Image 1 (cartoon, rainbow, N blue to C red):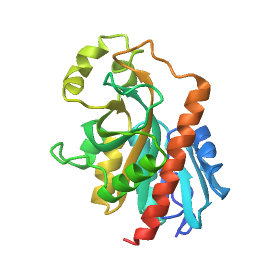
Image 2 (image 1 turned 135 degrees about the vertical axis):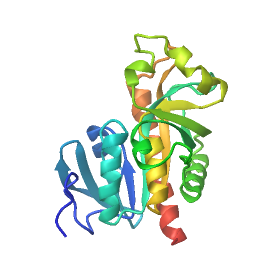
Image 3 (image 1 turned 180 degrees about the horizontal axis):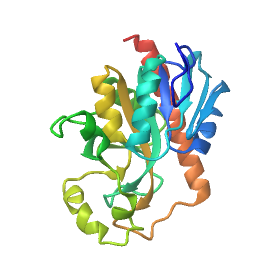
Length: 247
């Protein structure tokens, strides 16, 4: 088999569980938490490190921003052997009790993106995998992270639906706030639908770095770094659990 067109990987280059940050630099931060890791490929915004954690082969591939870029990574990673995907990312909070620096674990995602609609009718639900969700929640609780677990929203237009928007973003957010959607980000709706249809498993764990209802809430750099470390360790623990399930 030739290398995959975008991610430049071959079968055997990745573990069964692959972590999916958007940011290239965050991929290196995640890989630094492996017991050992090596750079496998770097093409465009896709950089991949593979290594081991507690004897389990794991990988991390950056996806860039948004569902179109993520769908390319997931499609190609599946072809080279990935079976479990855990998105490790950031989000904006939509609820007053979900603060910057907290941990959010998604059960499902409101499909506000365009990419998943190119694949599946809008009626098709974007739901995280039960086993990945259970592994993430278990690991978060064991690390005393007090996670918020529930529905998030994914969409395509950051500057139409964030506190940096030039329009009334809270008007757009109101249906989701009233529906107790925990937070908003840009990738999970395609991750969940695509992984389900391709008979893989996916989950999402996030750190809110902004707050739509409390725009003055900001996360200091040191707190942000600690939060990323925490959700990375939670994700690694979940990967070990998934490996032991042998499903």
